[in-house]
Length: 113
Length: 114
Image (tube, rainbow over all chains, first blue to last red; front, side, top):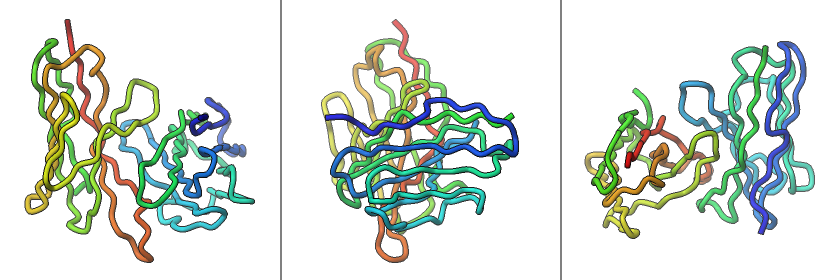
């Protein structure tokens, strides 16, 4: 069974540009989560989808971040415009139920120059 | 105060040693507790859930003390392959009942040497 996949694995962009990260959860997992790890800090929760609905977006840092999950399958996280402090590793996770074991993707390493 | 605090280490131990990691959490509303393992530049992977009664999985033993808001992980007979960062993770009921919000500690780095 395929695990959680994320694309791209790395992204280097300049400040002010737009980047879109994609996450494909494990097939059949209704719950999809985004997390972020900034250098030197702990992994922090961003938001939680149940199917296509945002269940909890309390961790989203500001309105430059937009997450979508149209159709309840894959999700995208867009950062527009990117700032230097957005650099970090963005992890996606999915679970079959909540609460339940969350399976993490390999992450997207974002560098904003 | 951090929601989940861990000793960052690193813990450098020889093969075969027993090593213990500790973690404290600040919010008494925390409901579920986990240890995740993260290898260098990889994603976190669930090592084990932690229950009040304590639980054991092979060489790994986890304990939870709700009164002290304290979680521990004991690794016996450590192997080279145990080298990784160990993340203490909790989650809570939030408004509306969702328990999706995992809260991570910064992690404790373990290095097992031959």
